[in-house]
Length: 183
Image 1: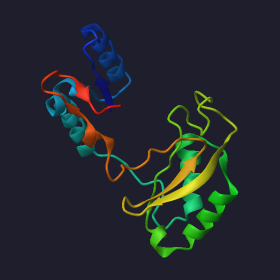
Image 2 (image 1 turned 60 degrees about the horizontal axis):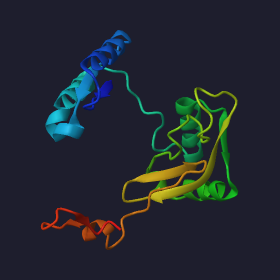
Image 3 (image 1 turned 90 degrees about the horizontal axis):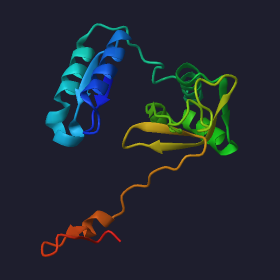
């Protein structure tokens, strides 16, 4: 499934070219202008996703929920990212062992956190690197969301919203039309 995230600066010829190339490669293609028209601008994409979901497929999960955590991480690293294996910081290894013994945490899914700039945990390694191991530096739990979260490499995690978030102090002065409360 390819979504053409069209902007006002994109020409019709550019959009047609991307659509043609993606379709020639066998992809289902949808145009989306949600940034401009909100939900209405994403209807073609939504319909295409629904159609794709209704097609017969041979989908299967990479692991069962009873698969031990380190084995899950190894499967994700090898099968999804192309790693040769996984290395752990001492802290992450200790947490993984402890989590594997906790019946409640064993029920949670696994959601990997790593840079989006590379298949590896190193944002400088581009393409499809060979001969590398995924470095897991920490493992977090988000019980409410239902995930154990291995953190690979150096990456900043977004903090949660404060009890009194800054957006509450942002407003528009109706007399001047200026935004206030940003700084």
